[in-house]
Length: 145
Image (cartoon, rainbow, N blue to C red; front, side):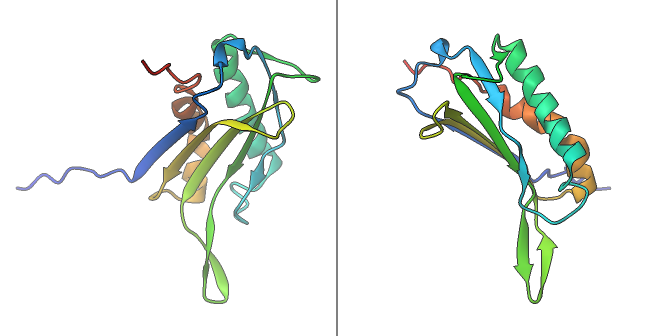
């Protein structure tokens, strides 16, 4: 009898601006998310709210406070990914991208991308809070020595 290990095709990547002093950033606001898929399991306001709530929880546990006006950083996100397949569109992968920019929105200072290649849109929708947690576990970035 052979035992075949399960291979999970999910991965994440985080990049940040090494010139930003993240310790000075104390407040955040969340910009409305968007979907890059037409799948209703992901492209709906309830799912966006689920992601927004997960972002709030994660950033709050790191000591940041949500501010409606004049926040230090603005957090945006997008999810899903469709690809053209002939005359139709196919759901290709579950992708969550979280962008953190300066208040002016002119400078991205942090980005996390989580991709799950083997999940249906419904499974991705259920896993989004976990994806947010994994990505934001790397915020703020550790200082390089």
